[in-house]
Length: 406
Image (cartoon, rainbow, N blue to C red; front, side, top):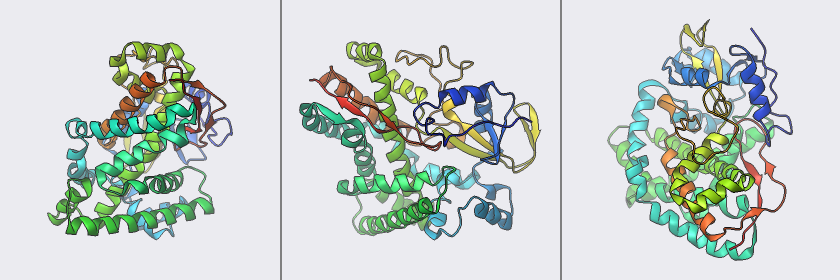
């Protein structure tokens, strides 16, 4: 059994993780990564096989007795966090089997393409107003001035939160999500727990408001599901919180990495300006080219055979979606950014039962923003160095100076 030589804490990994992924794909089998305590799947075929197998689960509760689950929780330093344990570690993302399917069915109608198409006018109006303000400035930080705000406004509009709270919720989401990386410092732990506490308090207040005065939003719909016995109160709060986390950070990250790709490939940007109908394909390529959520895990819930060998129950696997999306066995010229790429069956949204619920919403945000930006600022260009997020849990720019020319 080989051992993975893999260090996502390296300072250069955030900006350029692709050589490290290529090195992993060149190793045979699923190498053990000691820093993770599990085996890494970096090739498309292996990642898909594991993600699509329902014997592979997100939570150890599916195969381990409570005392073992608690020991694993302590070993991972996910203990002594009352709010995090109550609302984050038991969310739909970390639930398996019938309970996961039940929760997903309750919220899925709000995330269909048809339903979300009704939000296109809201997204377009917000983008147009933002560009009215930003394009005349000439120079912006694409992340801080634009990308960091759009997803929060849109997901908040869907759920029913106050638009003014979007920046605060984005910060809380970052604190919660960052604690899932391998670097779980005491400071990160404290921030994740406090952010979860504040999130829960906010959502409890919103729940009380909508229970008294329902609206056409997701919170009101989920209150009806709670009253019908389709979910518990804690499940409702945890599900809304997870949707907010997923709807904020990952979309900001892919907006940023998509912008970098356009700036680094002006021929592709020019093609999109000439043929705006290519934008849906371009957005899919942005997700493939630099997946915003590079890494997820699964456990084997029973003894099983997969990826060419036997594995005992409880084996932990790390699924490197970003690496699979650059696998030359799955994509021709995989390291090339090509807005005309078809087919483009990438894994940026995952696959299987845990496929990303909000993928249609993320694509709507991106198609709207980049279509408007390319039309209104055809002379856009990089205007300084890009600063990237560090670690393995998320991939995207922290800062992206851009010059806009109307």
